[in-house]
Image (cartoon, rainbow, N blue to C red):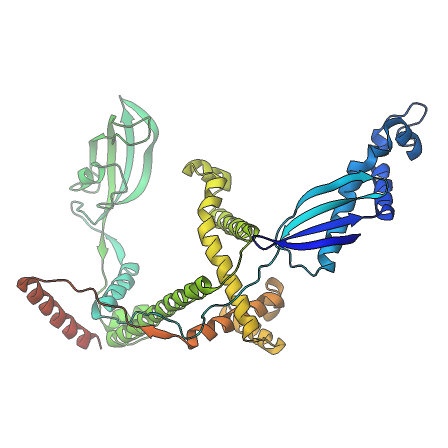
Length: 456
């Protein structure tokens, strides 16, 4: 094999003109003969036993050329790529140059390669960063979530009302006959949840345990075909009515749901956690805004193959997420009416952004001469083992050292950008307010300030 020429072409591609000589081509022809001879019938010879010269005499010397070219091409191409020290990022397009003879052949392979990247500004950038603020209302909302999780359902001897849970048997009839999917036993239905067909829950309101009732229901026009717009009757029996027993928000509640002895301490801890969460979100949004600028500032002729490969990666990740939810990918595509070509097309723009970001990070690592030691990698393994409460060797089994090293290098590159950046306070959107509206907002601010003092 010899490389006759190596030329750069548009879109970060390289055109290699490669010659396969007589000796290499002869070896490829012999390999082709060994593979194909069993399928070639030659009178007077058992299948696979006819000599190569006999076959070539009958069918022409070119009989094995096509298969031989297919055999010779990959090895010649890989050798040429290695010789020219190319960083290939996709598959080549190949065309023959001239005729193929027993003395060999020449082909041209045009292949996408890792692009040359010129960094733009990546230090001293600025981006908006939200100021983290946690109000008493935020803390109370988190308290409500804790309260909801610890709310019990208790039986009551009264008529069911909205917000209660009714334990019911039900069966639906269309024109006097039961229909499929219209029956349930000991079903716990939260009244007001709107989880049943419109009109059903409203008619259960007012019923008591032991009571039976026929409900007249008309299905919506947009319901599935069999029942759309149809009038049906549901026979319902109530077994039990339960109401929510909401715990009082006091010191006893704090002891039950946390490690704190007082509600005041619990509120303080919730405020701290919410602040930390929002600070992380603000930091991440600030970082993302900066890195978008860095990616936009690079100069690079990105090959289509890199974007297509990233889009495929996004699609594979999506398939994995669907599988984790227990939905077969083919079934999901039918249910949503989507097709893979559309998914890949939608992924093109975010894929290009991701590729440019990856190129920018790699360029920063090179420009800043960033390094990660074996000790850094080992420390990160230990950190992950502690974080996920896993055995250290098990973490190493699932993650390769090179992956961790790349991750740490990326973090260092991002830190170079973030540490040199300036955070700008977002501009407040002002609007003209009526006097009454301004007075009302002032009252709300004063009330919230008092609530915050109490929460602290």
